[in-house]
Length: 541
Image (cartoon, rainbow, N blue to C red; front, side, top):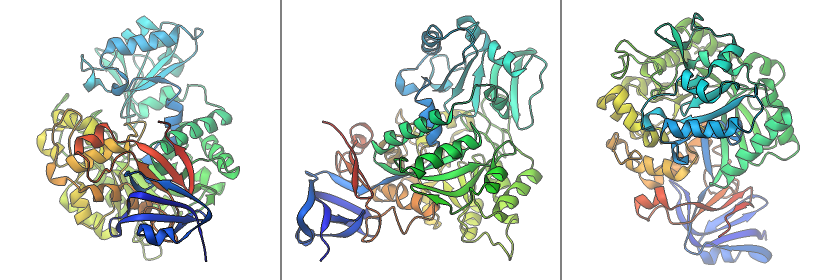
């Protein structure tokens, strides 16, 4: 008889949307041995079995952040934190934090930060180049808006990048000028002109950033993540850093790699060096290729079929590529065997990407069952949903966008488009697998705020955005576990607690299925994380 290495009991255990709840669970050799009543599982315990008493808490399958930027999160954790929840509510606070760092660095050294949301600032605007020059005349400064699609640079940074008042905007990007002078604002490919001049991190620094972010994710109950654009910041060095960590057994979390395949990316180089779909090294797996189609709705750069109601009345957003270029790229990576994971937020961008994937279909390489993905997929029509369902193209949304940016969507796009955004209920009813995610460091990684948004559709100030798209609590956990696994071709291994599947488990501080919904947002935390049957995080009380 096979005895358990570990038994969990004393609280409800949610095994999956179809499997429901059990009283106890047994683990052996890193996998779920059995689930059932407390008496049934007790019979599987031997002399060396470890017992964990849930003490009334609830356990769920390990969470899966199906679209985030793990390495970039780790890098950001060492930069200036300008996120609203960290206390940045005014330009004055941004300038104070930059000034504090400038005082500690020698002249000429870069000062970087990110996460501010101009909509959350008292002034409701971006910093200007003149304001950054005033506090840092001798240091190149570069900060990013929370969406990651807009950045602000000072004159020192602009000079290093070779940007002057008469420098034109690059294709698929913006170098903003006001009255013929640089404003400091850069968007999309315009940002790369500056970021390419920031000194790269060493491989050891990249490995440290991955580890730092992975351990943080484990502390929140995540056991799987997708890094959604590996190679975007530091090229092939990012892949090599991941490979070294995974080969040595030091990658703390299951990681699904999505390679940065834009024209300035590493897609072809990665393919030639063997970093192909289905490659696996320890906790590291490869599958997807990332291409950007547009920007962000909060930054007024997502490509829309109708203009924004805020700002320039002729602004329809930004396409990163022409239809011809995008379709050629999607067909190329599809034929190389990669899963497509394409950034598209506005309905016009979604149309460009959806039609491009459809055009890549062939008798020799059909798109059906390839599980191509549209990342974010924020603003789309019912007809586009039907086409996605027919082709098996899944959306990978971020409910946290509603929580953090929903009120800004109303201001930027009007109530109708805002309320129709990120339609989780429609996607599920269409038979799709909308895998919940955070896009961190764009938004907070906090899974409980994300789950709260899935079940309430409330923003951080309590506005309800598209209330008819709410999910049940069980469906919300399903979207954050099984759907993520499905989009990563891992649904037979992770995402549910079924005999034979990986023993990846998150123990939550409260029963998220029965507590007051506001407590999910404010009080629930992860108390313990189990990966492959081993306790890899335990909160110290």
